[in-house]
Image (cartoon, rainbow, N blue to C red; front, side):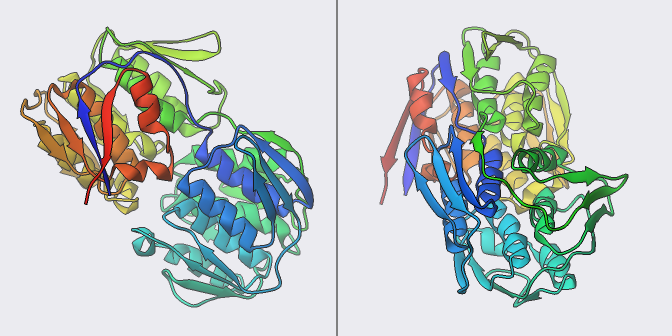
Length: 424
């Protein structure tokens, strides 16, 4: 186990954040389904991306990575039982289950950490209705049979990942399909990413009033693809800069027209009172004023940990709501975020789907907070430690490998004072 020992400091300078994990997951799967070689540029490994690469290999793809480009030779699939360890990646699990089913591959899915406890019954119910036999409603899960084309009805407020899995897989089926939403779609940006990456690989879905129409027997086409930077990861550094007029950070590699929902961090920081702008192809942020924030997080759940830190340190109070689904992430993020902020001395209160912040200052003594084996909690608490005013120790620091393995490297290069040490 590793812990991060962090001392107060200011971050300034320029950073290029990793490629979007959401985009990479989808690009690897589309390349796996395309017959021939695809080249995915501006790639980077994390534990979640490794899970998707390993899953694609288990289904039959040949994949190489040279440190910058992932080469995928796809379109050939295994005729044996595929054994797929999704590690802690919910995306890998929820995307690959319907894809393997559409290919008619007998597969066993396992996972680690909290993933086996995260719900997938909605997904297994859907693919079962399409002719696939599922051994259970949780991990380990074995599937047999081939997914049929048809009409699939799904709630939009459960997980956009279920919808992405269906959209990726149904074009492979014999016949046309429909996906109909029974409730309004949350995390819409992630589905927009899916549709965009699919189109890049030659497969189209047509939006309808309540969902999508998917033509069957479509062919994914191999191509050269460049992954854009990750707005979710950029948010940690932009928020760090927004909390001080002595800190200025430029973040490169981002797409101003991105379909990533978390690009909303730009507008949120503007409302917060930060001096934030585009200049020279980079987003530059500097602290200026602090305004109270009231944030509907239904479309941007991954931003909640860092938005919680931002709101707490503003001293103006505020509220985050619409974040019920955060209770079934790598940790119960509403609880774990509040736990960290309370230990830092803030007055915060959980609600069923959010957090209410009182306009109070933080504590002053040396503090130890838990990372809960959750990469976003660890990174958010690391930003909080910059401004706490005393030493902060965060456990489970290694969990950043799930999405941003070089986070502390970039953090220290910008002026942070984080020592990541082995314990036990």
